[in-house]
Image 1 (cartoon, each protein chain N blue to C red):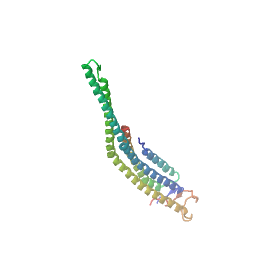
Image 2 (cartoon, rainbow over the protein chains, first blue to last red):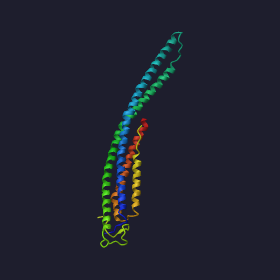
Image 3 (spheres, chains in turn yellow, cyan):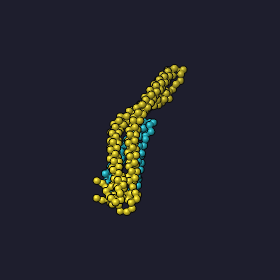
Image 4 (cartoon, chains in turn brown, blue):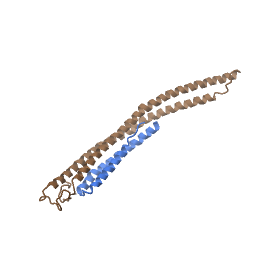
Length: 190
Length: 71
């Protein structure tokens, strides 16, 4: 059996604590990413869908008002051709305003469509990724538990070996607790 | 607009810190048990964590694009 070579079991204990803290960080990060997905989904569903629906209604009203104005202007133009009173040559300005209002409404409709497409896409693509993150979380938890248990075992063995009376423990060197443990099987793999 | 938590960066930093902590053990611990622990436990944990970082990063990319297009 080959020898252990460790100066102080505290080296193992310190790393064990770091590993345990690491596992908690992993768990928090993996849970956090699922939280990100939920927040974005809520934002799309509640805020953005609601916002663009209101915008569509508002812009539709503005478009209809611009359209009525244009129709009135068209009527004025026709009337001015038939009489000598009102002199309205063109309804072009009203028409441009109507077109602008229509484009604005169409933009809002497209924005709503984009939001809805993303809701579907995120559900389809993030769903499997969230499952993956959960699997990673569970696996890392399991692996860390086993690793921590192994470190505890190794540290316990070193401590047990160091506690042996010097007449039993074949230590080559000084008997101080900080001297390397050598030769014994305290930290050797089974 | 929702802010993303940057969990992939958090995880990468944690992995880096763990690697540094492991390297630090080499000063006082240098035997087969240490090598065995690295081979059977630590390397697996590192590989799985990197896979987790990739999954989080993929999701972040999608979420950021959704936020950008829908804002």
